Image (cartoon, rainbow, N blue to C red; front, side):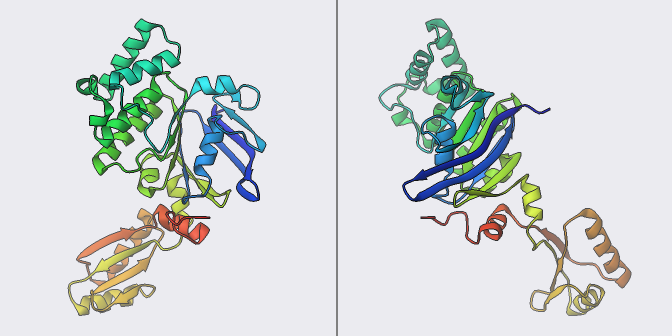
Length: 313
């Protein structure tokens, strides 16, 4: 049986009359990367804060790294790391001093703490900047230092709450590589993000949170297959070859101006191969063929009726 990194059953949280989390059930296998998607205000950060013991739930049973959140909060805190939306580094300390402070907070012996800080500075390519204050760092360097501080206690579960917000594309990809490396080492990653490409790139499984409920869960590919709209676009050299192809593929939508056909498909190799055989039998070859499949933004819109970046009150 697969060990669970995080299990959530019947999680509820309200603030006055506003229901933020309305009966959440979720199982995150140990060593997996699970992404929680949702618009601003959907309850993502609230859920992270509950799982990290920062705020209490109103109801529900939760275990993190095998420890019950209600009865063993100290053991949960000892097993987790949290990187929030905004950097938690101290700009008045150097990068090295930030890590040594975390080592003290983790009650590591002085020599072990210094060795661990040196190891993380090397690992996150910050050794040359170790004696500088983070005020002189780029956004990507600050985020790497933030992640290094999170890892100082060698957590088994890490919560990343929108960790790449505000980063440039290169820095985002650096963070992605760090996350993948952690997961390969067996660390459970719980990632919240508004960036659909981030979830698509990183997550083993995706849960879509909308208005306090999980409305869908599965691998990125499984969720995409739930949404209609996959198609093959074929472009032809002349109106005559377009007409012949249109006759061979009667289900296709025809674009006379672009000399193109749009053919509904499930995107599988077998179906595309069948389509090409029909064109070959008709004696025509397309100039270009492109396969279009729904992305996670399409999934979110289809499931909730609004885009991922739409604020929710």
